[in-house]
Length: 359
Ligand SMILES: [Zn+2]
Image (cartoon, rainbow, N blue to C red; front, side, top):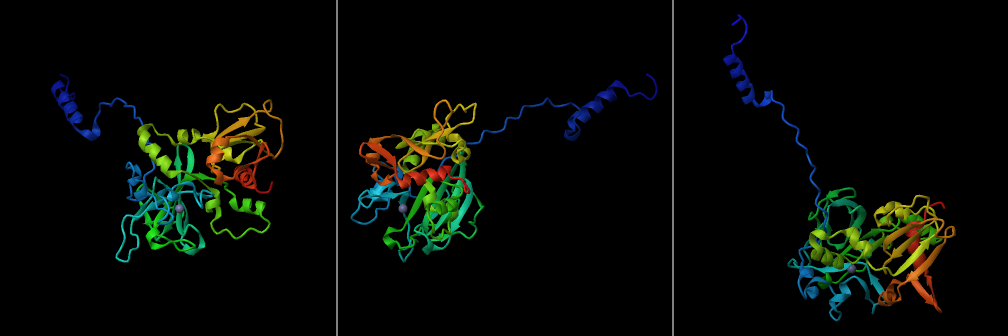
């Protein structure tokens, strides 16, 4: 063997030593494909410990009636107030625990992960009392949840705070512009879509001298509530198959309205509601299906061959008369003689989707 060259035995021993040393492994590892974990779909949780909604016949233990002589349904969503003439845009959830003074102590939890959009700590400034609005991005939809009549809001809950599902936001209560009796302490809870991102401009567009709006876009008139109980029950029933987008786009429409504009801010903010496929040309109008509460359910862009341009006008295309009869308090449309027309409320509902300040 030539001098200065290692023997084969020594060479093998060196290789073995290198292979045994984790940090200097000379044998290249074969590349492994890294599949990013699929994020679990976001589901809404009940915002308090009261779960009677999911019990058969549990409604009287879940909803807070408007008084001892009223049924539990007066605390549910929809045309349930003032003999069906006034709309209740959320659900009133009963408290489960009270302190020695009889005041509620139930913690209120965030219903889904999101970001705090608004906090009102001035209890007497709003019918909602102390309330919190949280925004969630779910199924490519921006959804809000609202927690009202709170007794207390945690000090660390501020606009832009990132919040997790189940995180405690505050304590259930009875705060409001007009005091809620102690025995009716409850959480008013909403889930829904945002109306306009320029709500103050809409107010100035509608009224010559609108009252001050300290709530900005988080004013209840600009929050378009879905029925949280129906949504939660459906989600519970469908389990893994539940899709919020499919749920919303399958809801029945009270009316269909054509908006004669080539660009619709609503379609830009909620593209997940747009019917596919997208038009190859610039639309000349949009059709929007609205539910009885004015929530947009489906949007269709229309090409010039389908509809004649009619700048800036709203056109009522169809009304489901049977559904309208079941939701008289919605007042989006009105029958005059044999023809249906949009009411002022209906026109304003569309302004939330179509109005651009300065136009
Ligand atoms: Zn309520």
